[in-house]
Structures are given as C-alpha cells and as structure tokens.
Image 1 (cartoon, helix red, strand yellow):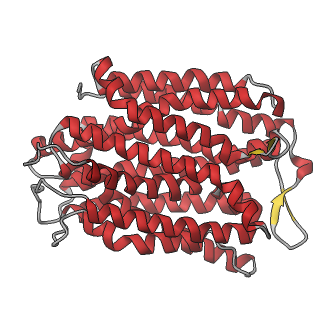
Image 2: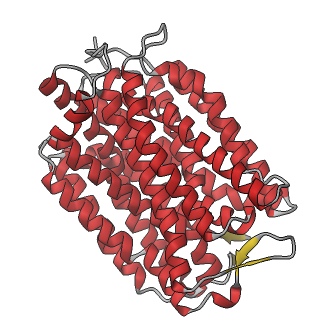
Amino acid sequence: MATTKCSLKEKIAYALGDAAAGGITWKIMSIAFPLFFTDVFGLSFADAAALMLLARLFDVVTDPIMGSLADRTQSRWGTYRPWLIFGAIPFGLIFALLLHTPDLGPVGKRIYTYTLYLLMMAIYTAVNVPYGSLLGVMTDDDNEKNQFSSFRMVGAYAMGFITLLSLPYIQKLIGGTDAHQYTIIGIIFGSLAAVMTLLCGLFTKERIKPKRAEKYSFSQFVNLFKNRPWVYLTLAGLCTNFFNGFRYAVAGYIFSYCLGGNVTLGSFIINFSVFMAFGEVTCMIFGALSPAFTKRVGSKRLAFIIASAICVVFSVAFFFVPMSPKYIWLMIALVVLTSVGVGIYSPLLWSMYADVADYATEKFGTSSTGLIFSSGTMAQKLGGAISGSLIALFLGLAGAEMIRNDVGNLIIDPATVTDSVRTMVWSLFSLIPAGIALIMGWLAFKFPIKK
C-alpha cells in the first residue's frame, strides 16, 4: 500500500530526475546563459532580454496545459513516468544544441536561438512537470514525501555542485574558442541529463491512482485560484526562483566587471561557477537536514519563514563587502551562509506543493496533481528567465553598452563598465534578492496549511 516504506533505490532514482533538470540543465541555463548569449553567442542585451521574456510568456500557456495533460495520461508505465522515459533523449539533445554557436549571420542566430530556447522550455515542461507530480502519487505518507523531496534537493544540489565546480576545468581541458568549449559542454552535460532522466522514469513507482477528471474542463483552472494555499505557495515559489535567478544569473558579471576576472589561488581557479558551487554543496547538506530541522521547529511553514530570514540577513551583508579579490573568501562565506536558508526551504517547497495537491483533491473531488505541480515548474522558469532578462535590462540602464568585436559578435564595451554598472551588479546579487526573500517569508507566514 502507499504507506509502506519506499526503498533507498527508488529515492535515489527520484533524486536523479532533479539532478538532471535542476543540477545540470537549469543550473547551466541560470548561471551561464546570460553571459553565454551576450559574450559568446553574440546577442545584444535587448535580444537576450526579449528572448527570455518571450519564453516566459510561452511557459504561462504550456505549463498548466502540460499539468492537465499529464493528469489524464494512462499507459502501461503509469500517469507521469512515461513523460520522463520518452522525453529523456529529446531533453538532452535540445539542451546540447542550445549551447552550440552556429556559423550564421545576426538574423540566423536570432532565429536559431529563439527556436531552440522555446523548444528547450517546451521539453523541460514536458519532463519536469510530470517529474514533480510523481511526488503526489508515489506515497501518501507525509514523512516519506518529505524524504523524497529531500532526496530530490540533495540530488539537484549535489549535481549542481559537480557541474559548477567542473565547468572551468572542463573548459580548460577542451581548449579552443569559448564557442567550441560551450558546444562540447552541451554534448557532455546534455548526455548526462538524458541518462539520468531516463533512469528516474524507469526506477520509480506510482502507487496511488489519481482521481481523474476524464474530461478537460476550464473549471479546474478556475479552481486553482479558489485554492488559497496554492495562491500563497505559488507566489512564494515565484519569489524563491527570483531570489536564485538574480544571484545565479549575475554571478558571471561579478567576476567579469567587479573582480577583474577569475581569482587564482595557487592552482585553484575561482570563477563564477566555482564561486556558486560553494553554495551548492551547502544547499546539498542543508537540503538533507531540512526534514530534521522542520521536525525540530514543528512545521514546514515555520521552517520556511526561518530559512527566508537567513537569506535576507546574509544577502544584505554581502552588499557591504568591498569589490576586491582580496575579500573573495568573505564573499564565499556569505554565499555559504545564504545557502543555508536556500537549502532548508528548497525541499519544503515541493513537499508543501504535495500538501496543496492533497488539499485540492479533498476540496474539489478530483486530482489536479500535475496541474498544481506545473505551477511550481512555471514559477521556476518564470523566476529564472525574468530575472535574467531584468539583469540585461538593468545593466543597460546603468550604462553598459554593446560593441562588435573582431569577429562581429556583440560584446560589452569595457569602457562603459563604470562604477554605476558595478554597483548595479553588486545590488542584483545582494540587496534585490534580500528584498525578494523578505516577501517570500511573509508569504510563507500567510500560508494556510499549518503542517
């Protein structure tokens, strides 16, 4: 029955799903894409901002449709698992193609990037919405849900740590131009993401049969907005991804504009990906400790509020660190301390979505697990991409301008990287995320389910 203990093997398999989506594809998309699109691929700030904003509008439509479609899937592999099994290879392939820089003119590059980016968002939705929804049908035991959610976050952050720490060394090993390096990185990590997603689909189990609403009905979408826990949690989820989105997307600019490039300590290279990797390993540790911490404080809601407060305090503190490589270890220390809060709230968010799905089933009589979890995925993509597009916009407003380099690609004019641009970068990593975390904590305080 659903309340039986689930095996360690299945929990590891479930963790592989977010190791692929969160630890590889989304991590690289969040931290490397803004810099890749403007400094390597050659898009202007305006093009990069418009691309990410268009993709978000696309997701507003596709994510809830995918959630509703997944809820009605019936196959020999179950309701949600077939989307992982058959979506794994396209998932990895499109990701790899997106990191390739074709030999095209400006118009051709725009068409290539816009097409591939929208396809990536579509396949990410087709895989990740069902993946998140699996949590609602693998068990009805609340402790087991917390365990699965914790394994998920540990998998995502452990793989994120490996991905970010290895990037500069893989680039150095590959050699050649930046464009060539990113092409090979796409092939390597796209292949890994495909294999992990496939293993997740094959080695997890669906034990609970959803109460299906066999016919499509607009009332299910209306019911979402009648579901107060869903409203508060979705807004909180959006804030968590704005918080992470700003920090990860601007990390590359911190090293390029504020610290004068990579910081080398002996044979140890600290670039933007290694810098954030310290946070990833912290998130992994505290993601694993999150269930115990939640049990200690007495509720998911209170644990989420405490985690948000941690993010506020140490994000604000980062703003007052001088912009100098001499203070790199202090910066890393504050990234680590901020990541304690991120590690605690990340598994809680998905476990709370499972509670919201249970609440919706009781209140409205039919399962909308996929639809509800799709809002979490939509919030993730919306927060990541809008924050990325806003960074491009804010840097432009602060005075950064684009010029063409010797091979015709658009790059940032070094002469326009003034103190105002540097201060904007610093604020986008610290003060702005702190304000978002404050709102996030207030939304958690208002969340009606008191588990």
